Length: 201
Image 1 (cartoon, rainbow, N blue to C red):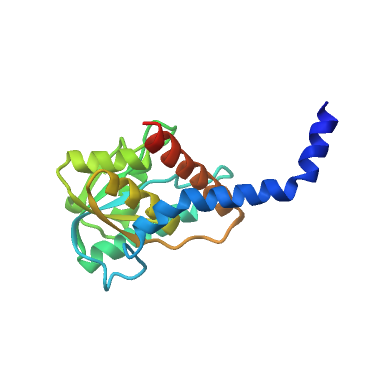
Image 2 (image 1 turned 45 degrees about the vertical axis):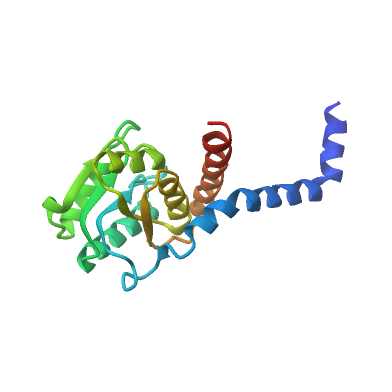
């Protein structure tokens, strides 16, 4: 039986790969379309906002090495504050996963000379959607997200669903093997957003 299944899969591998590709494109269309003209690599043309949200991730990889996704987000957040495009910075992450993302971000930003009075802590931002909801609860209706481009697209889409004006400031993306795992995880997050959170909510 298993051999027959294997033969069927092997004969149809191209069809399966094509189906996966088309499916990936399908779920990305609304997210990419919504983020068009809302993502910026430079602060020059980025609209001003009262607050920015630095979306959290672990400071370290499983092998103990520093996470470049994290470091590049910290650098981008500092640059955005220095530009004067935002007045406050929300550090949004989780502390219920064995480490405290928010405290890590706070310490590293303070080391870089960021004024502590410009920092707002959100330790319940365990999901991107929750980060948006927590910002709304604080009274903010216009947001600049800080993360890598692939993450910003989904964050902006989530904010639009809740009637929030938002933009994204792009942090550099590392070119590493670990990056592939992050992109795959993002794909599944988008599948969940489109099907679980939208179609069946």
